[in-house]
Length: 254
Image 1: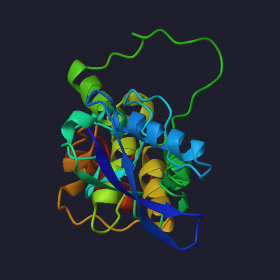
Image 2: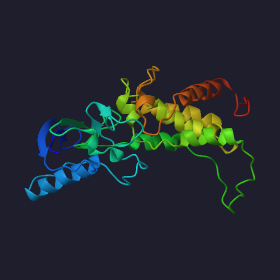
Image 3: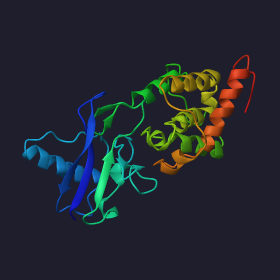
Image 4: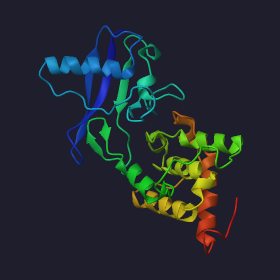
């Protein structure tokens, strides 16, 4: 396959950027999208040009770093996958592919296709944890948890923090990410200690980072590579409301 690319190039944060055109020849349809970019960068380096900067790590759909906006969609046209799981057989010979970074003020561009997502880390630091005393490892079955509850917590915990929800949202809201991180702990007994603090602090940090409000369009759920449901946003809203109007952490129950 011969592929044409229009890629966003930007020297750094607050620097002007623009699209530049490239051609990559003899692309195997079995290549992943990132492998195709690797080939492009090898050619750029051979010609003495600055390679295109993009984030990647595991290349197994686990880490969430390969966050690219491809032909107007986060992670590309396929559903329920990350960019590293997108293969070139998805595209046609001679097709022009437009590649951009996430577009959100809370995700400033570092260079080219790389954005700074440490705002997610600060949301987690605000309340995405449980109190754990040091000492021996507790038995896994010491606290009985119904399978339905464990499954629901695991569904929320699948969030890899890639930021696709923010990129797809017209308000650049990170409510799906925040809700997943609140929800995975809210349903478990281990998460009850910080329950009130967690909901209030994480939403406050979300807003402080400059993310927009949720208006329930469902765009976040539609592009999430782990298919996190927006029902977790409903739980976050309940957790936040209860915490805001309760006098203490023990004033309300499930």
